[in-house]
Amino acid sequence: MRHPRIIIAGIGLAAVAAVGGVTAASAGGSAASSTPSASPTAAAVTVRTAPATVAGRTETILVNAHGLPLYFYRPDTAARSFVTGSLAQLWPPLTSAAPTAAGASGRLAVLNDVNGHQVTYNGHPLYTFAGDHAGQVTGQGIQNFFVATPGLTPLSPSSAPAGTAPAAPSGGGLGY
Image (cartoon, rainbow, N blue to C red; front, side):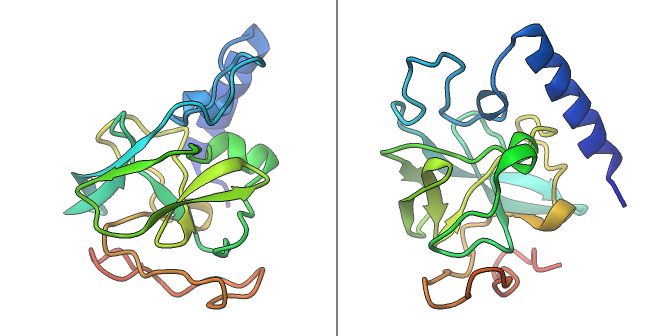
């Protein structure tokens, strides 16, 4: 079953692309640029914490510098992102060669993969959702994406073989 917000977001992204607008990654708040000569990892990004309403409850979540909620994808492993192609248009990877953290005590790192220098938190590659706006969480639980919280259970390289889902997140009560 398709979620109406995903269909609407997809149509909106297609319209912007058809007119020659920005790339999906830059529309989603990633550090990517729409100009081919600019490096998608040139800008540093900051991952910080912020309060947000998730499933009717106020939670502390991770957001990017623009206040967009950050998500993780359950099928990803610590060594590989499975978000590519049209899925990456709706869920743009957060990329930066030099990410920084503010208010989050987990491990922030960079995974060099198909998405470039993808930012990870406790081993989980991070994404934004094309349907979100600053301070809004609309992608929770859609297509196996879940809001990243400061207490996200660390994902180690040996904790999940390729193609299997890691355990539900701990902390923040977002394990639904």
